[in-house]
Amino acid sequence: MSTARPTRVRHIILALTIAAYFITYLDRVLLSNALPVIQKEFGFSLVTLGLIQSCYQWSYALFQIPGGWFGDRAGPRIAMTSVVVWWSIFTIVTGFSGSVTMLMICLALIGFGEAGAFPIANRALSRWMLPSERGIAQGATHAGSRLAGALTPVMVATLIATYSWHAPFFLFGLVGIVWAAIWFWFYRDVPSEHTSVNAGERQKIVAALGNPKGRPPIPWKLILSSRQMWTVAAMYFCYGYALNVFITYYPKYLDAARGYSLKEMGFFASLPLAAGVVGDICGGLFSDMIIHRTGRIKFARQSVAIVGFLIAATCCPLAVLQPDRYISAALFGLTVFGLELVVGNAWAVTLDIGGSFAGSCSAVMNFVGNLGGAIMATVTVFIVTAWGWNYAFYAVSVMALIGAALFTQIDAGRKLAPEGTSPVV
Image (cartoon, rainbow, N blue to C red; front, side, top):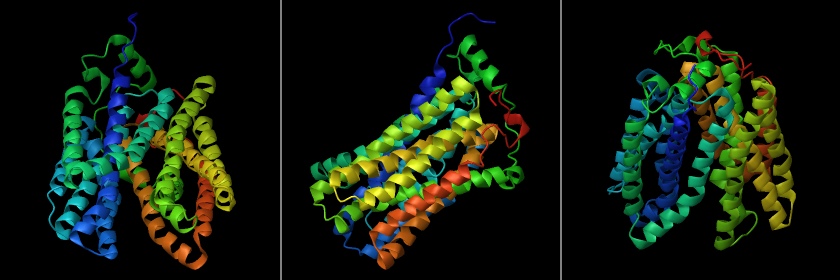
């Protein structure tokens, strides 16, 4: 038994993964912020703008499962490097677009690459992060993406105003390529392959996770026939629907239903995402604290996520009905805070139950979650047209209640495959 103080290479890998999530949302939010400027230059209609955006959204959703499969088969080192280089190259190519057709093709190819990012990153952490660290790790990674979502509009606006709409595509694409080079140089698929990991850290990881068993065939039949897997996916559908109401329609709601000015919209629209960053961190932190104190992984994941869903279900309708703009903004912030208490625990569950197949499990979950977001975009238009904006946000509350009920049926301590066993029960 080594007496050397364990190294913390796994925490450097976590930092790189957080950076990957940040870069993913840099490019993702870049698209939605640059397209209105491109629309004015090219002169296409609002319907065409929607078609261009849908090329990315459906490509991103449909390639979640293939992306997770690629991560499990090729290993996170090669797979993550490949997808980031892929979408970064096409982000740069998008900057050269001179037609609507080229934009649609480029955005579909970007979505194809980015689809694998979160499932592969989840798989990358599965052989490194201890079960008692997974909640905060998932919270931190998603906080990185939400932080990018809050910062990107300002950066894009500055670059476009100073140069042109082409500039952010070139710059953000280069950032992704640099990150990919660092990842390929530093990351290893298992701790035993990393020369910077000392015996103390290696023993700590092996004691918690066991020894890796190579790359066995992915048990798709087991995954797709698992009631628990589909319960997780259905829960994430509810989360994806609810959160994307804020990402997609909240600024429009402030304009159409509340009559805010452009300056006011910029301020108030940023508040829920800022609250979401706090929720991401707290969700993982609270879950891991409960595991440290009780050793009950099922209770830890369930309690934090269910409370988060219930906070969202309670605060959202109150926010809609509150006439005071600051109290309403605070309640909307609490709604997104509650939803983000869920996300880190949801992704931690796919690590807990998936083991070596965490990439494929998280891909199934994220695929269904993104379907929720895509369906929401259409359903909300019909809800607003028929009944008004208030009912669009009441739907968020309904989805949060359903999500809470579904999470009561999720057992993070019950593995999908025997090889994924963990000493934490």
